[in-house]
Length: 178
Image 1: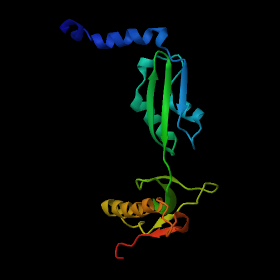
Image 2 (image 1 turned 135 degrees about the horizontal axis):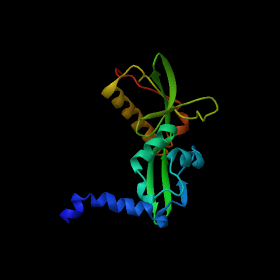
Image 3 (image 1 turned 180 degrees about the vertical axis):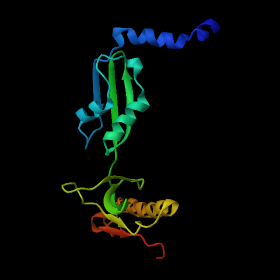
Image 4 (image 1 turned 120 degrees about the vertical axis):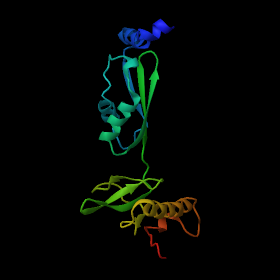
């Protein structure tokens, strides 16, 4: 065992396995996409057909995909042995809109259930979400707490309270003094 480890045995085994054609990727499947075209995810992954299934770096692949696709929150790489790869995508789910500062300008962004702004809302996109305002100037923990309170309120609305239906709320203004 010591000789195996000293001779860089694990690296040699990996090299041998990477060279076996039986483990060369024949198919890449993408699931979970709603807003992002699966072909785009496949291309952004930079996985090459006929490369070895052993040579895949799941973290690097997720970073490549997320860097090019604002709707994508997580990507799980699943190896379907011996020669298939599944990219299971989890996209952000918008629940509200909020204004954030981007340099010198303010932009309207979608926000997910965790209060995380993730993509700028642009013309032609669905804008039928409540707007959370009043948090533009808050920073750090203060902003997180204000967004958490607004998201908590939105969560209560989703429970279909007949006295306060979620369709009736178009804006939540957060005011730390009130």
